[in-house]
Amino acid sequence: MMEKDLELMREMDVREIDPDTLPDIADIRVDTSLPPEQRMASVLQQMNGNPYFFRSGSLIVKTSFRGEARLQTLLENCLETL
Image 1 (tube, rainbow, N blue to C red):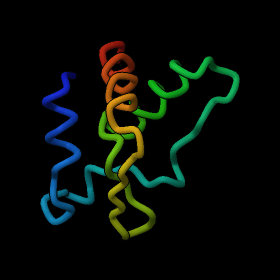
Image 2 (cartoon, one colour):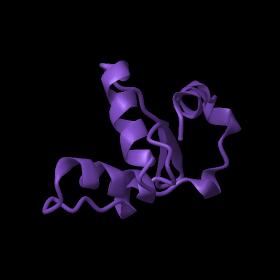
Image 3 (cartoon, rainbow, N blue to C red):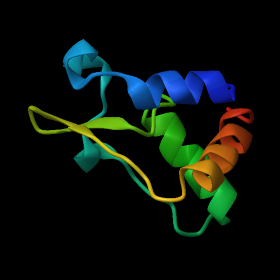
């Protein structure tokens, strides 16, 4: 996954998202015994590789992050290992 892919995900309109493709946040499990990079990779995998969208019940949630440049680098590194 490249910077371009993350940019496309970040710029997606919530109305373009098929809710059936999104995981419910209640089903995401964080294994705190893993090192941070592996933990992030696991969460991203559970989120179908898209850190910007998830469901909470029937509600679609779009997230944004501060420090987007640093996050993008971390996400790219983790997604490359999936």
